Length: 118
Image (cartoon, rainbow, N blue to C red; front, side, top):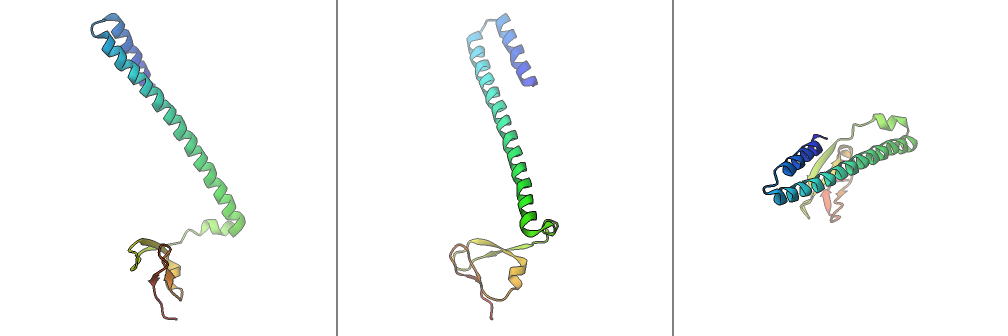
């Protein structure tokens, strides 16, 4: 990482010119600590991304086992966002559910999002 090289170069310059060296050394030490922390965070992020990728693959395997291989190819679920008239919270409803008969209950307050005549 060139950032670390820049820090080392700055340290060499401070050693050559000791004027205000204590302040600069303190700043360099702080930057070094920050760089180490960022490196650690980068490693953590890489591990998290790998774990999410593995979970996604596992989920695909589970979907295939439960619903069959065709379920993975069917990605035609469309959703509509409705606002509950009772609690005013947004709710995503599957497009097919909108065309089914019966009331659609709000998951937040259990009030009817849409009341349909049966």
